[in-house]
Amino acid sequence: MKLMWVPARVNVDFKPLLKKIKISEKGKIGLVAALQHVAQLPDIQKHVPDSIIVGQILGCNFEKALKVKDKVSSFLYIGSGPFHPIGLAYETKMPVYVANPSTNEFSRIDEKEVIAYEKRKRGLLLKYLHANKVGMIVSVKPHQQKWAECFRWKKVIEAQGKEVFVFITNTLDKGSLENFSDIEIWVNTACPRIEDNEMINIREVIELSKQK
Image (cartoon, rainbow, N blue to C red):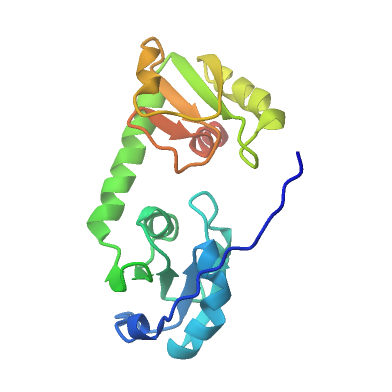
């Protein structure tokens, strides 16, 4: 079956929202956005003094922001939802502001949110370190398929002294993982937005293996 990719951009009047922007930190501001708002960044830059365009960020990829973190004092995220900006604040350890076109609200990511996010990550990593039976989730969705890497990752986990069970799935319903009570913790190889109280992302597992 052929696939057709159609760019979907949001046509929003940002001017009322931009009037609410107040950045406390002195220095340059890095402008980042969700995909649907990237095209508007040049126009937004005209209304945000001393800013530079960084580009798109994802919950699993903050490379563009990390490359410029030494050149800016803060980041301004254009988009909705806390997932991306909290991740950005966690990865860069810098102030992150949010301009939400959906609600027309401007806010700053609270440090308490970042600390809570970090504590949760640490707790899951600790649970992973003590786990013996690990479930590795592999998605069949386009652009999330990791067939080439999954068996290499399986060996990485096994090298840490754990028994690994690979689960191939298209969707994860809330609570569906509870059917496998023997699994002590889950490792997600698909989109990191898929989060559960008993799940860590493969990136954290790889980073652990490098530390040894």
